[in-house]
Length: 290
Image 1 (cartoon, rainbow, N blue to C red):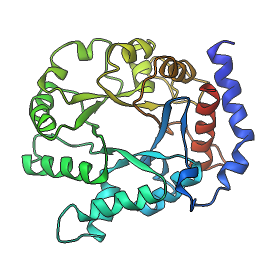
Image 2 (cartoon, rainbow, N blue to C red; image 1 turned 135 degrees about the horizontal axis):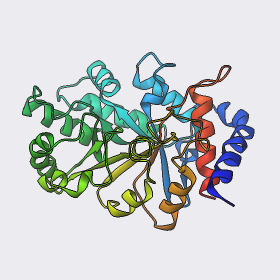
Image 3 (cartoon, rainbow, N blue to C red; image 1 turned 30 degrees about the vertical axis):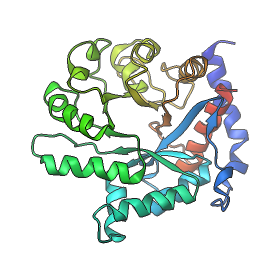
């Protein structure tokens, strides 16, 4: 079956499983949460739930568990809000408390998203603070959302190496197939890539799979979505040009262990909400990886 047809059927099929899945309560037994399918870890961005949320890490956790997902990329504003409210003698106590809250619910915080880390006006002390916060959360990496550039890489590379923690550059449509062929990743062995496959396809009009194959050892996670070429619209999965099915099957075949994080980029249909749509995307992933 062609991937485009499988994509369409998978997304439609996800709707059938939706009603039962979105009725899931917060799970007392954390072991029941599992969004790893045939070796591929499916996670979610906490930003998917911003429009439904009061901005609290607690509300985000509720939605994540309702979707049945056990791994998250958590934004720094949600993490810091909770950490301030649960501060202790050590500045990192609040982040450790947040890690426990999520882990007790069966959710792992695998990435701390700090979009502005390494910008010119940010002090080295603040950068160090975010690396320590990520460690306290149990994260394996930090994601940076600002433009990919050598200046930031030169500054952040030695700090990432010092902490022995990956820092991944997130891309928008400015990315090119040769963006990482130059010096960017040479400034630190812990510098990496958070590859947004929708932005990549929209900006290059090429499949993201060759980029994944080439840099698989430097990728901290994917942002998984579906978008049209030529900087086109974000679409319900299976209706764009990103080929999420092909990407997931490539990850499964090659035993790639970095997470593929659901990004809810398309417009939520009338009568639905973010939890329902993320759950639909999760079912899509599960079927694609079956």
